[in-house]
Length: 327
Ligand SMILES: O=C(O)CCC(=O)C(=O)O
Ligand SMILES: [Fe+2]
View 1 (cartoon, rainbow, N blue to C red):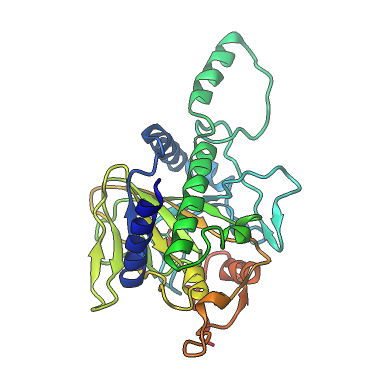
View 2 (view 1 turned 90 degrees about the vertical axis):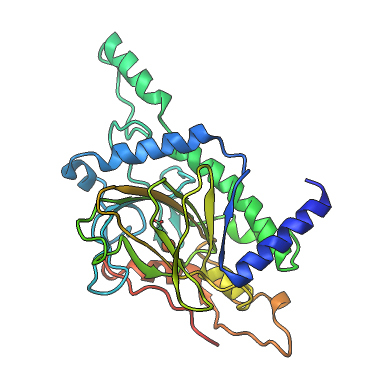
């Protein structure tokens, strides 16, 4: 892309992040088929019997990974949803710890689109063809995760530019990233006015790239007047949500977005957030370039791994939602 176009784009990104805390991307180059395949895999996963989903359930010692059906974004208010979390880099066993965080994926057995848990021998020719067919759509999650990561690094460069930083200024933080990709499933709710799929919250990530299906339910809170507004689904688009880390790095120039997932009386809804998270060891603090004598640090520094772990640890079902400490 010519430099002039990139500059214009980063100015648009700057305005969107400053005024809204999110933007929508189109023309990102991710094939429709990749998105269709991951959406189908998600549908297949949540359509399984409860005991099959429970087999890959989140555990207290690895609270960032696996299936979970009882999230409490706000204490004592249960979200109307089921989730399945994976680390998109699929590290080999033994490399699944990032600091204190366990990122070893829990793959369901024999489900199209998901990695197979074990290599089994072929029992017959029919078995071979059956599994070959399944594999046509196998690795849908990994394929989608790879595309997301490429997009995430492009966006990271653009966000850095938009903050008048070197385009690769933030890349190093993501070398041993702790990114999580989440499949969200919101069943229909008989009384959508009385519950939420995901209560109002801010993401702890640097930023989050969200796919949503065509049902609609992603709401953002407009800062100027506190109004909740729905972000209409646009075929082929992704929503990019500013998280708390960018808020701190930019020393408050960009604020994390308050958002929620609303429900639908008739229709189920699916979404896939890609929480772009840095290495566990990262100290999150206002970048020196964003701090001036007349604009001193607004936030205290914190360790990402400790913070991320504590958001889920203790009880694997509750976390109070994020609050970054004011300096
Ligand atoms: O489902 C959605 O549209 C949003 C989900 C979300 O905000 C989250 O999982 O953090
Ligand atoms: Fe979120």
